[in-house]
Amino acid sequence: MIKTRLVKNKQTWEKFVLSQSEASFLHSWAWGRFQENVGNKIFRFGFFKGSILKGVFLLIKKRARRAVYLVCPGGPLIDWERPVFLEKFINQIKEIGQEENCFFVRVRPQLRDSLANQLLFKSKGFISAPMHLHAENTIQLELKQSEEALLKGMRKNTRYSIKKALKLGVQVVQSDQSEDVKALHRLQLETVKRSHFVPFSEEYFQKEFQAFSRDGKIKIFKSIYKNKVLAAALIIFYGREAVYHYAGSSSQLRQIPASYLLQWEAIKEAKRRGCQVYNFWGVAPLNNSHHRFAGVTLFKKGFGGQRVVYLHAQDLPLSYRYWPVYLFESLRSFYRGL
Image 1 (cartoon, one colour):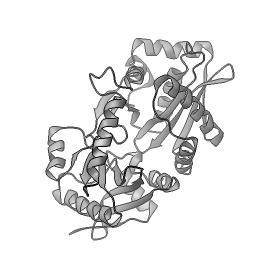
Image 2 (image 1 turned 30 degrees about the horizontal axis):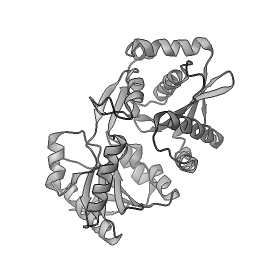
Image 3 (image 1 turned 180 degrees about the vertical axis):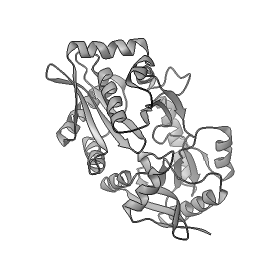
Image 4 (image 1 turned 90 degrees about the horizontal axis):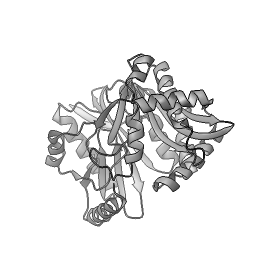
C-alpha cells in the first residue's frame, strides 16, 4: 500500500531526489527553501511503502493578480510504469488545491515530450497549459568526453571565439559573493534592453543564490576584460547536472567574445565537479526563428550537445475561475511570441 505524507527531513529528501536519473534542481531541497524565502508556501510530499520512500513531489503555492494556484516543477519523481503513483499524486494535489482555495495546479514533469505522455495526462483530466513552466526546450551537453573532444564537437565559430577571448586576455573568475549577484543583475538589465524580456529582481537573484550557496551548489561566473565585467552567469551544480540558469552581458565592447569563454570555463568546472551533463537551459522550439530565444539558441547550439524537449506544462483545473486565467495567459503568450 502506497501512502503519501510530508517529508520534513532534508537528508531523506535529498538522498532520494539525487538517486533519480532525471533529478532536477527544481525539486531540490534548496529550491523549496528559495521559494519559501520569496514568500511562497511549499509542500514536500513523499510516497511511502511502509517506511521506504518510493517517490517525491514538491508543490509551490503561487499568488498572482490573476489567480492562486499550485505548481509542481520538474516532478513528480515517481515510477511512471506504476499507475498507482500518478493516481496518488493527482488525488493529493487536488486535495491540497481545494484546501488552499487554488484555481488550478500546473505540473511540468521530467518526462520527455511524446504523444504517449501527452495522452497520459489528458486521460487524467489535464490540459496543455497556455504558458510554459521553466525550461521545456533545452540543449544538454554530455560531459563524459575529454576537453579536446568537447572542443572538437563545437561549431567552428564557437571554438574560434573561445580562442580569440583567450588571446585578447579575457579572464573568467568564479565567485560566491553576493556583490557579484548585483553585477549579474545589472548586466541582465542591459540584456533586457536588447532582447526585450521581463527580468527578475535583484532580490529574487539574491535569494536564489543564498538558498543554493548554503550547500555550495551555485557559483557566479564573470568574464573580465581590462577590469570591466562584460558577462556574468549564475550556474547551479546539482546532482549529475550543471545548469546555466541566468546570465547577462554588457552592451559595450560587443566585439569581445567574453560570453563564449565564460561558457567554456563553466563547462570545465562542471567536469571537475563530476557532473555528467551541462544544461544550457531554455532555447527556442524547433523551426521557430521568430521566438524571443532564437538569438541565444544559436549561441548555445554552437557548443554542441543535444536538444532535449520535456513535456509541456500541464494544467489541472480545480475551479471555473481557471478559465479566465487560461484565456488571459493564452493571449499574453501569443503577443509575447512564446
